[in-house]
Image (tube, rainbow over all chains, first blue to last red; front, side, top):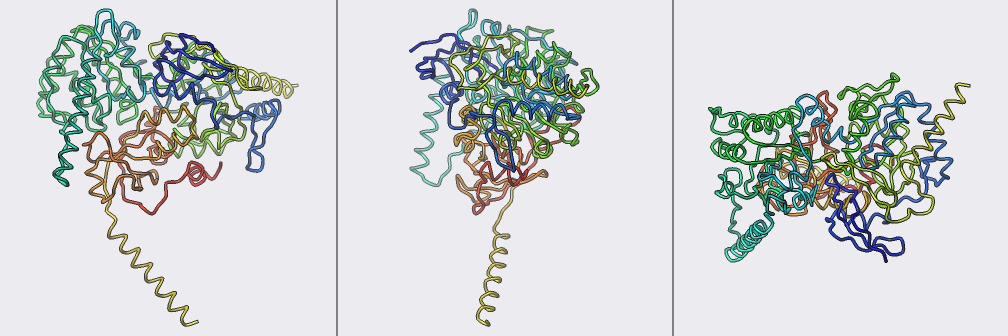
Length: 482
Length: 157
């Protein structure tokens, strides 16, 4: 039995690096410090849906094949394709992404990472407006106002609050953990009481308190760390917040611009914006201006809803305005553990963070044209390679329809919806469990991923599989060139 | 022979009235579809995208209890969610954090994406949140399994 300390968790963009794993007989048997997703990954990764042999579709059915045969077939498909798409990359190591980019250049394809359906609009806005940001360590030690906008870290980044924001014990900022525990207990007690009332006077509904028009509580002006959540629905994170603003769906842009006006001491001649009374917004703007160090984290609530990149433009501009009055930073809540790494490696290799088109022989970047969803919607691709991703589950139906009509090669440790539609599947080792590598945290801090157990027999890493495909593609092209 | 014909006629008529009744009974509700993460979906996806945990947690729709009353459905009844881009049967669950009338929530996954908006507005990003939708009770329609869903939508797999 071995205990491995300081393991980096390969699940979300928080990339917690304090995980302790107990290993016995080449198996992880205990996870310490991890969240529910981290535990599910380390304890359950080797479950029944693991793929252990390369599979090739023959007459509609998957048939096991040798690694060499699968590599040859995949290389043939990619070498012959005119306009292949290479998609995924956010759940693998920077080292594998580097080989993927080399492959994309070799075959003249479009290479795109999951940021394209995630924080792609954020990247576009950052390129236009710029981003005042910092590392998560600075926020942990100094920030006295945290705002989560269109993001639910309790579900998507479960330890974000505990490690980097309100529940972390910083050097200059105390943890707000105890206060929140008391608050949650009170809330649960209240719910129980309501249920009891309901039982006594059955059928008489006790309505939940309306959140839409709840005014800011006095605690919003406390000295300690404060938490404000702005979202279209009341999430668990919202429940824990000192103040929750429920914005009407697709109205984030209006609310952001209203805050910009208020921060610049301009008056609004309307009663409410996006369903929130202006007087409450004035109070919140006051809290923003009067903090010493504020941090705004935004999620896909801003990038996926109406306005998309313009929402982010407004959010970045709001932070710029706030920096004239106090110190404020902003950061996107990146989802996959190495999506930031994918953007970083793409940028240092090609000059562009995602949606890179090599079909003309040099990298070209024009999201909306060279982004994978648009290529698929126009029906232009003629082959696809998906690495460590599940676009069939996560793209809109119309885009998937063209993707699955292409010869589809999938590299993934697990069976998933995309692998089910594949023509060739390569099983791969789990990065950060069975193979080492580098990943970038959401604040662009690179962290090493550890290899803690051996992969099953014959299972290679994403990097090795891609290298072999690349070598075979070069051999085929060399033969053709004579 | 005659007996058969009569029986056939009757059964056809029953069918029609049955259908007719259903048409009258079925209330529809216009809502805004939100998609996103839940911790259950996150845990499920790490266990495996084919795991029961994942599939059971992404083929659901969280609804405001008041909206459920308007549709005349109970917790865990199947509903049909339709948008301009498609329709899908999911299991309706009572939202734990109501009230949010007029808003329904489906976690990210193949079921949600059967009805999301592919429009990228020229920047590569489809419109995956805040989509106008219509819901109606579908107690007799089953929630498709992942295999059935893929077959139905893409005729492959």
